Image 1: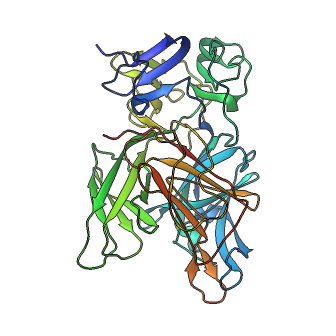
Image 2: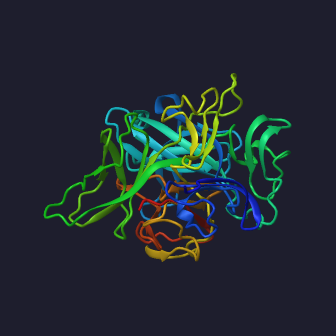
Image 3: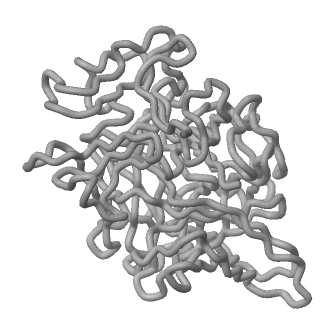
Length: 430
């Protein structure tokens, strides 16, 4: 029988490790795309906060910027999600917006400020149309990570994990990031724990629609590997090497999604998508009743259920972590483009690729003491030109192919001194 979980020594170091179905966790040379979790990962996207917020419940704000060098200043409207402790220097995020009546999922333009996440569905409301952003419900997942430093080189991980009775947290499984002591570390330093949420995908994939005789919105219907009766969030972007274009996704039925290109075109379009498996509202912590929440077996791997729910009674949405779901293995943050550049394709840094096909990349672009963030795709909020009234985007980055990302920007806009980083996820869908 293939072993799918390990709690002990491997390749000279103690670790907790779990593999995806059909792969031997005891193989030290196992392709990282088939590892569901490994406590020796160089760094980690550590769960910090999450939630679901109705647009009508959030305060709004209009900001004027002189980013547009064509036509003067521009304005944009956004919603503000208050998250104490968040900052662009130490956090990143995934933000989606679901249209309340149409059911379309937009990936948001998302900006991290101190203690605040500023969001707007990309191209859904350029400019400052009053009330338009109230038509959406916002889903957000926030992670701790320092993009300008890495966890220490692996040496002795004997004090980074505990399975048993923690001196201050009680009984459970606790794994801290490298370089920290599991018995004394803060909650923010815990990577995987029975008391903390964890981000995963149900499945991911790539789908292409060929050249069309007549320009259309490039709606592509995709059949998934199984049914999802609860219709979880969908993240999607256009991933081929053509011009950057916004997309939105929808559920057709429990086994089928459709992805649309916002602009009409006759060219071929490739989409990258993921079905998110993590409830952003789960708060974690200690349960009020005693339950068997940690499941480890050779055929199942490792599973952790939500508090007050035992693994023998858990439904599909009652798990914090499962080995048969795909994680965001945070591998690297590196500068991915020079300070001044032209639109076009650029290569990822060496050793950043760890995916099948187009990588799920955590982009981060620093600008004016804030950080624009996104998964596979990141853009500044669509800005309305104050002279012409036309929507314009200032800067967009996206994962374009297995080895390259694309830069797109308006006209002759140029800049200097802006750092941007990419952390490639550990996703395998072949």
